[in-house]
Length: 412
Image 1: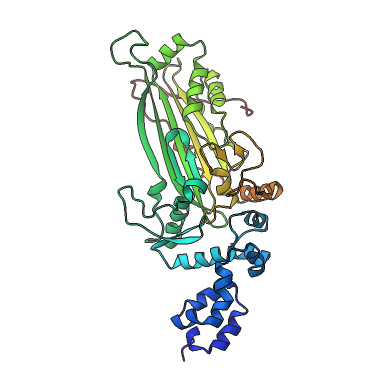
Image 2 (image 1 turned 90 degrees about the vertical axis):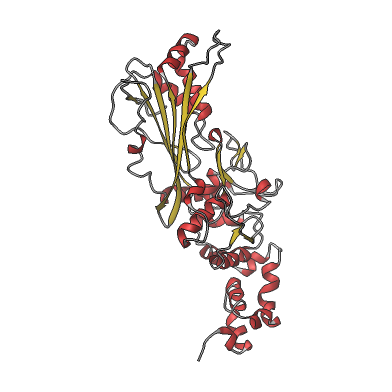
């Protein structure tokens, strides 16, 4: 005898559904056309699932059950309830269940709908972002390199990793490998010459997404950002400026990106350049952002006579599971607009802006800090080969010996 729900008497199905959470009732209703259109069963789920009354979320799914359903720890539950835009948690949980079986759709956490995926494009994108993303979306950004992606991109990458193709998007969608790009600061006219200026310097960046395991799969980004200044550039800069190390530090400040909070790159680089050159094989100091889950290290490689200089910045950022945009690891690393992070104006530690309504209260600061303490305690350290990846490239100049310059002080 088959035990499918639609073969059972409707009265028995209703009694069973009385003990189920709302999302499970929806799954039962979707097992057959008869159960889906049964009015008695629809009264149990349809009005509550589609209703937008915020009080529904409390009576439909108690606080403790929601934490378990979203697989949240107790420290993260308060963050879920401070999201003013999520007025129906059961709807979001239900869509997550359906999303697993609908690879041709993707779940939008902004409008809480399953959007149809679009055809493959030349850029490799297999979905079109929700229109709400233009004004209310969250994105990760390295502004100096014109590199950014939205939360939906990270979410789809993780979905491909967990469920496999055709779900989600491949890793390549958020990878970046920009080879050396030549930049000239001074025009020939400024140098009193009609010939093309040889005073150029170069920059490059490599961004690689990686999966590490903590309490589950976590998306991490490793970046290697590099600036190279040839000897002719350093020599001319020394003639034009009395503090060439500070000038190079300012360029690093402009063209390097650690995260959306740390912005003292120039001071670190200038201090390293002022140190006497010496060969050092020891591992450099790993610094840490005070807000997000980013660790980073600076390297300065230069000749003994301080001619050519190569500066390397390596960052390691944990973005969390990327399952929900309200989880602390992603939230603290993301941008709301080009000038706003979740901690307000760049460099300011005022209370963050709300997600949708600028007049409503957002995250409770104490709850937010508790969640971040949890995120830091469960985050895995950068991989052991992070430092080994930072070997400088072979210089274009001949017979150049590069040595590593590190700081003797830990408070730089």
